[in-house]
Amino acid sequence: MKKIIVAIDGHSSCGKSTMAKDLAKTIGYTYIDSGAMYRAVTLYCLENGLFTGDELDVENLQKEIKDIRISFVKNPETGRSDTYLNGRNVEREIRSMGVADKVSPVAAVGFVREEMVKQQQAMGLEKGIVMDGRDIGTIVFPDAELKIFVTAAPEIRAQRRLEELIAKGENASFEEVLHNLAKRDHIDSTRKDGPLKQAEDAVVLDNSDLTINEQNKKLLELFDTHSC
Ligand code: CDP
Image (cartoon, rainbow, N blue to C red):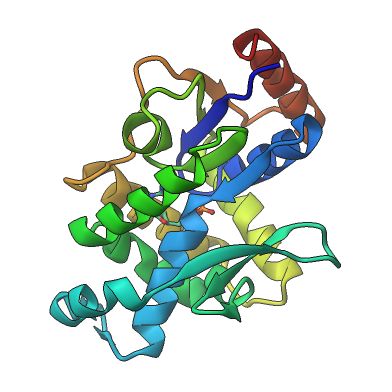
């Protein structure tokens, strides 16, 4: 069967990555988390003094962007890909609230997006990938054979993200998480370059009331109808 590209876009914390990972595993495709790449650039900025409060030093980031190397390496213990920043495993750090709080302004910078999109397109040359993000079906792979736009009610998304953070031992309140999601959604949807937008030919999936099993079943049906 010929390989295709599956593009999954949607709001923060609506379960895109769980969905994308499960689907990729079932169909034997490679999963690529484009958000992890923006998170890794953000971690780089935080660690290299490119933030003063909320102020990003765009000028120096532009000088250094070419030195930021992001890769994914399979972790034999978990069977999943971990994100590496310049050769260092940063999978845990990039999921912190500190990074979540600063990632949307970094991801709104034009040259950051240009560089990430280039790297993402290179990863899709052979097809056989499931990539999730905000602009995958619109900018990165406008010709993707299957595009899914995922959404869920904000309170449900915040509760899911809160449970994820608590499970990792992070301290956060429901209000703090809800506020962070609303802020990121706003910046992501209104930015000039690669805004979060539903592609015209995307299938919309609201998973507010779906279990993970129901969601996976729907996805697999969609994959079957789009891959032949
Ligand atoms: O996990 P969650 O959906 O909350 O976020 P993520 O997918 O890890 O992405 C983190 C942030 O990166 C988003 O809030 C966006 O600002 C940015 N992003 C983007 O701009 N374009 C993408 N293709 C993926 C993520």
